Length: 214
Ligand SMILES: Cc1cc2nc3c(=O)[nH]c(=O)nc-3n(C[C@H](O)[C@H](O)[C@H](O)COP(=O)(O)O)c2cc1C
Image 1 (cartoon, rainbow, N blue to C red):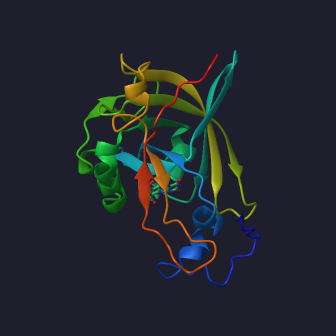
Image 2 (tube, rainbow, N blue to C red):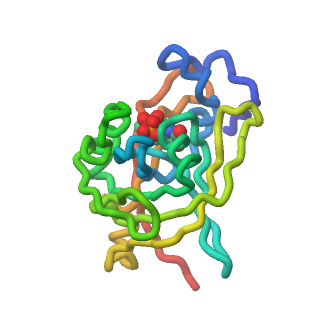
């Protein structure tokens, strides 16, 4: 059976913490699309390394370049840093680093080196300022090309950057380094039963590959 969910939040979709739905759309929980997780690194105005857990970056490219599209950025150090310095680094980490990435959310002070707070090893970026994450399976150093106000109400932004440098693992072509516990991780935020008030706990996921006929 399919259930249709309208643009207005159904009454039985309850907040799991006060104010939840003043930040999030009910579709994020009621119509889950797993989104790839990454750690965005930038520099704070005082030069301290900043790291932010982020879900949903996608990529598109052609001979002019390869572009990272980071949707759903709200007001944060990351957004402010990117607007100011016009550069950022996207680091993809495997599932063993989920808790370490979460730590960077909890340790979010202006004076905090968030890369160290997460227990990560900083490596100086080569084409932009700031640091990338040594433990990442893949990092992209990016220069900002544009910012769009997604809602038209100055709440949520799409940041687009052109990749200047990709830092890949020598095993990045192997399925076990793309999929599985050592590969990319995806966000599955507190799924909502579309028919009842029931909510599942937040989960994360990784990929299981299957071979396709060519
Ligand atoms: C699993 C997960 C996914 C997240 N995805 C996003 C996101 O897509 N966009 C966003 O603005 N914040 C997201 N956050 C929240 C930020 O990581 C959090 O607000 C962080 O503290 C911002 O850091 P900053 O102020 O240092 O930039 C996510 C948090 C978690 C735990």
